[in-house]
Image (tube, rainbow, N blue to C red; front, side):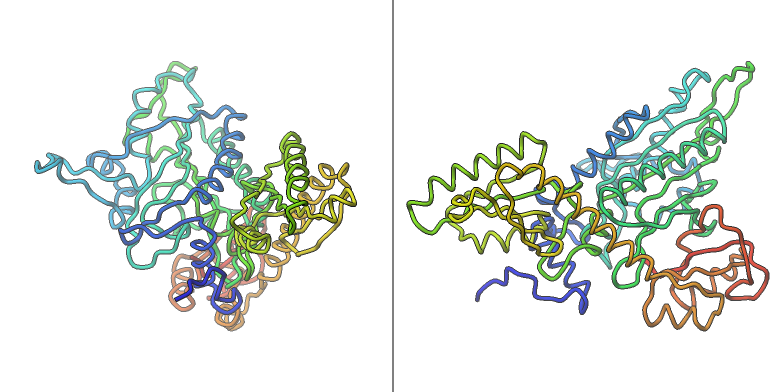
Amino acid sequence: MTKEIGITSKKAEDLSEWYTQIVTKAELADYAPMKGFMVLRPYGFALWEQIRAYFDRRLKESGHSNAYFPLLIPESLLKKEAEHFSGFTPEVFWVTHAGENKLSERLAVRPTSETIIYDAYSKWVRSWRDLPLLINVWNSVLRAEITATKPFLRTSEFLWQEGHTVHASQEDTDKEVLLILEYYRQLIEDQLAVPVLTGYKSDREKFVGALYTTTLEAMMPDGKAIQMGTSHNLGQNFSKPFDIKFLGKDGQNHYAWTASWGASWRLISAMIMLHGDDRGLVIPPRIAPIQTVIVPIYYKTGDQEVIKQKSQSIFNELTNAGIAANLDNREQYTPGWKFNEWEMKGIPLRIEIGPKDVEKKQITLVRRDNKAKAAVREDEVVAETKRCLEDIQLNLRTKAKAILDASITNTDDYEQFKKTLSERGGFIHSSWCGEVACEDKIKAETGATIRTIPFNEEASGKCVLCGKPSTKMAYFAKSY
C-alpha cells in the first residue's frame, strides 16, 4: 500500500486531523511509546531553538541569567505552599522508589519549579544588595495529560522556559511582570506573526498562588483561544512559607516579593494552526530555521555542472549576508519532489535555478505564503531575498491580525453571546459584574472562560449575564 506523503485532510474541514498530519508529515514531532508524550524531531527542535535564542537574548539584555534546578522535588517542599500544591496535585507524577527501595519521602517530577527554586532563594537572598535576583530556566516539566493529548498543544511533558525573580517591593515586581509580558508580545507578534490580546486573568483563572496573572491570548481558526504565555506577580505568597527575607536599607528584615513567568512550545502549535495551509506548514521568516531553500534544476548532463556552481555561489552569497539558506543538491530526488517537501516544511522562500535562469543571469523566487513567482537578477539576489522575506513576514502578520479582529464579537446580550459561541466561537467582548458566580455560570452553560481582562479599559454597560452594573470588561472564549 502506498504511503500518503501529502496532507489528506482540509484545514477548513477537519482542523484536528489536518494539524496532526502537519506535525508528523513535516517531521516536527512523532508520538512516543508512552501515552501523552511526544518525540521532538530535529526540524521541530530547530524551530524551538529559534524561539529560545530570540527570547534568551532579550532576557540577557535586561540582566536576567540562566540556571538549572533539580527535576525532582520533595513532597514536603510542595506542601510549604499549600494553595499552590493543591492546585497541581492531580497532575503530578510521583517517584516513590529508587530501584527496589521505597523512598522515605515521595519526590514529585516538577510540574513547575517555584518550590524547588524558592527553597534555594531562601539561602541566597540576604540583603537589599542581592536584589533584584533575576533567574530564568530552560527545562521540561511533567503534568499528567493522558486522555486528550495533541503534539505541542497538550502533552504530559513539554519544553518551556520559566522565570523566577525576587524583588524588594511590589512596584519593582509589577515592573518585572509587565516587562516580561512585553517581551512575550514581541516574540509572539513580531517573530511568530501571531497577534494576541493582553490583560489580566480573573481571580478564578489566575495562576495558583499568584497575587495576579497577566496573559497573552491568541485565536485559532476553529474559534478557540490559546494561552500563549503568562507573567505573574506572586506577591509574598511564596516568600513567607519559604522564608525569603532580606535586610532592607532601613536596617529591618522584610519578606521579598516574587514574580514568575513562562511560555512553552505551545507557541509552535499556534503558529502551525494560524499560518499553515492544505499544503503544509507556513513558517514566518524571522523564526524559520531555514529561510530560503535553493533548488537546482537540470535535465541534461551538460547543464549539471554550471547550475551546481551557480547554486553554490548563490548559497554562499546568501549565507554571508546572514540569511539562513539551504542548498538542496540531492540527486536522488526530482525538483518537483523537492518543491513539495519544502512546501510541506513551510520554508518561506524557494529559489529555483535552471538552465534558462543561468542563461539570463537571473534566479526565480517562489514565495510560500502566496505562491507568487518572480525573476530576479543575479546581482540583486541578496537584496531581493531580504526584501521578500520581510514582505512575507508582514503579510502573515497582517492576515493573522485580520483573523483576530474578525473573531471578536462585542455584545452585552447573553442570547447573542451564546449563539455566537455556538455557531462560530471566537472572542466575546462583554461587560462583567466581577462576580465569580456569573463567571462560573457562563462557563457551565457555554464552555467559555474569561481569557483576559484588558488593561486600562473602563467598565461600561451591564453584566452580560446578570444585568448588574459592570465592574470590568472581559474577553470570553472557549479554549484549548
